[in-house]
Image (tube, rainbow, N blue to C red; front, side):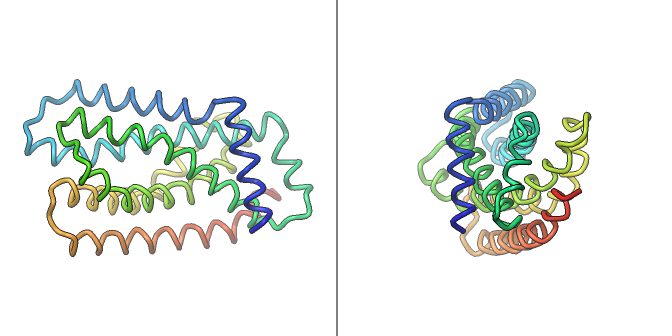
Length: 222
């Protein structure tokens, strides 16, 4: 894990210097939220039904842009080739990239999620705190699959188009579970139902991380 944390530090330091990934996620996510807010004028009950979907649509589209940019920077600077030449396991490289991508997404979500709740008149500290496990687990699952697919798409000239085509069908189960869990929190329907969806999210996270760790070596070698 020491190699993975070194890669995380490298990614975070690079982002602090360039400021390309997090602002990209934030700006695009905010635009999606604002456009969807103008498209609907919901009542309180409709807001509780619509907001979970809006949250994860914003995360999905903004996250795809951020993952694509992260992988593109590695290709442009030949950074990935340098990392592959280092005497570290390929799985450590994947885990480091995964943790960095999760960090970028979570930082953006700290702004995006409260913004959505405010726009839909659902903001409350209780809601934000209760949403944290769902947001974290959903983000991990999305980033786990997104990291490997972004690496695959980075070698293509059509990576901006190829990444969502490859990624979205795979992460549909994560988003379905995340939307359901988010709706339960917003509607305050009880912890018992929430735990069921959180367990489903945790299982998908584990499956995606294990599968991607095993496949990443073959992806980068090709």
